Image (cartoon, rainbow, N blue to C red; front, side, top):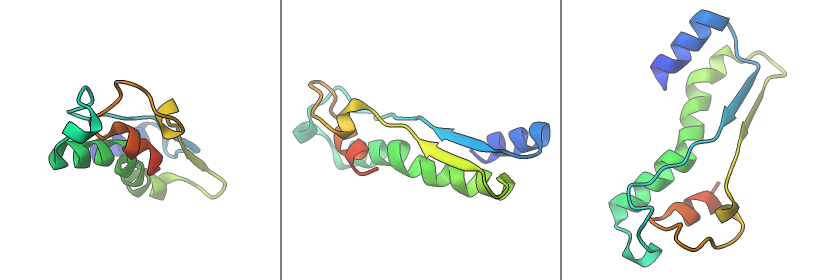
Length: 94
């Protein structure tokens, strides 16, 4: 994230709008109750904490009045069959 932020700022100087739309989990094909702690924490980190990381790195280049938003997935509001590995609950935590 740090190198991407540096490259964007170098090329554009500032960031007016930041959109976060990332999700990943190494055990997404497993049912929730078969998910390991490591898999769950990985899903939570990539799906939720990554927004914090983006703000940490891009925030200093965002002038007053800029916007940051994060997108989610249907699993944030309802159960989605087959969307496991901690991903559904990682989305709900956002």
